[in-house]
Length: 399
Length: 226
Image 1 (cartoon, helix red, strand yellow):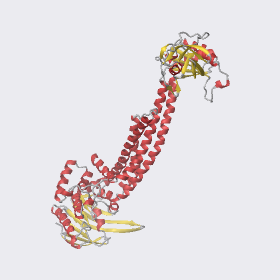
Image 2 (tube, each protein chain N blue to C red; image 1 turned 180 degrees about the vertical axis):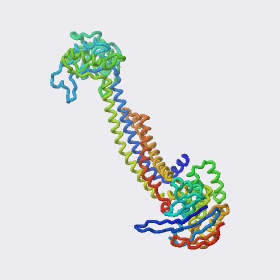
Image 3 (cartoon, rainbow over the protein chains, first blue to last red; image 1 turned 90 degrees about the vertical axis):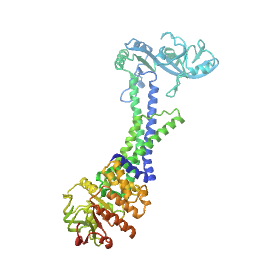
Image 4 (cartoon, helix red, strand yellow; image 1 turned 90 degrees about the horizontal axis):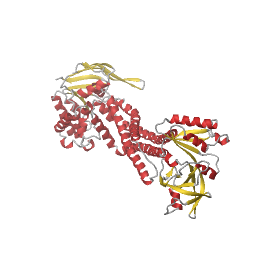
């Protein structure tokens, strides 16, 4: 039997039971739709989160106080930890490969200017903050020097704060009261938008030394070290760890590279995508049962036809292939419909809710279609074998 | 061409052995026109199925064109059926969702014959059997006579040496039945061996050889082999 004839014969039976074929195919289509839709959203989310995390550049190492250990909790809770100080930051500045060290802490303060008051987030940072995080200063600049003991009262505004407190005027050189202290505005950041729900524009940035004093904190929340892109991340981590251990006497801090963080995050998101995909897989299973049912019925109904085919010279194998072909055609068409539907709904959702990230990798689509065809194959095997093994004499006389 | 010697076939029904055929000896040559008659249950159809390789004898040998075909496996038997044997049934056995032309084409499709060759043969058969304006109709749009003509065209599409007809006129009125018989008898003239199972003595009487069966045995044979 030639392949085009196989297609013609299987299509003819598919077409003669239109409604039934449609409903059976629909079972598979719904399954594939669910898988494609869920994985599209999962994968979109995955890419979205990774992009959010890596937009500051990937060659950044973060140091936090307290050592995260396998036996739960941050030891910092028990107070046996030395806080990270500005001196620690300075000590790291002289390590090889290190380009910038940015001491960092944050808090919530009241700012006031032009008779307007606003509660906003205050970031205590180093002067290389913008550079390290590849953020742009729209006008003005950061403070020119870093004097930890005599940090000057200078502030850089987020674009939103600037808009609210200095509408339509140049704020550079004006004074802003931050938590009751007077700061001179020396720069305005370019708008950055929200990052994982945190509005980067609704902030004011002051030197870390002043922020510690203002917020009355003993140490930094974290330090970010940016290193040369050509350097080996593990070597840099080792250098940082050794230097800080020397200073602290023990490893009471945690060093995380952006790379590691992204890796962990990536694998968590992979599991998420897989889990929602598996959820859709259950509906595929139901579709497979539908195909099994319909093919079993078809064999019973067409017993006489099977007998005839045998009498006309069909081998057992040809009968098997004909019925397997029908099952696979049903599932392949169902799969294609599901693919179209899944991608369509995903893109439609994206149009209605632009914030919802959606992404359908080609590989997923192909894998889904192959899965659909395999399901048809597996579900069709038992009925097709039964058809092939029918006794031709008995089959011919079945009516 | 066909040689059956001491062929028996028994079935197990419940825990009893029922003999459908007992020690049949039969020779059929190319161009023979043989009718097999007898009451129901006499083993006529079983004999036809055995000759058509749809069934295997319990004992005895069956030689077709000199070769023993009882020992062949499924694939080989299917090939013999495809190349040498044509079937015509009482209930026509057309595939309902395929057109008349596609039904005629079916044995050639299964045999893997090239599409151009198939088209030629179908066109000729449709012409010969007066189905030209019916070729694109489905079986349920055809009359009984037309359906049986499609079935005969299908049975001859592979140029078989043997045509096995099981009550081919059983579902047809007398006039149509006679027309169908005339078509089958035309094939005998083309040196096809026609074996006809019937219990209509008028139809059976037209054959050159008439075999009467009772209880799985041939009790009498009249006529001659050509």
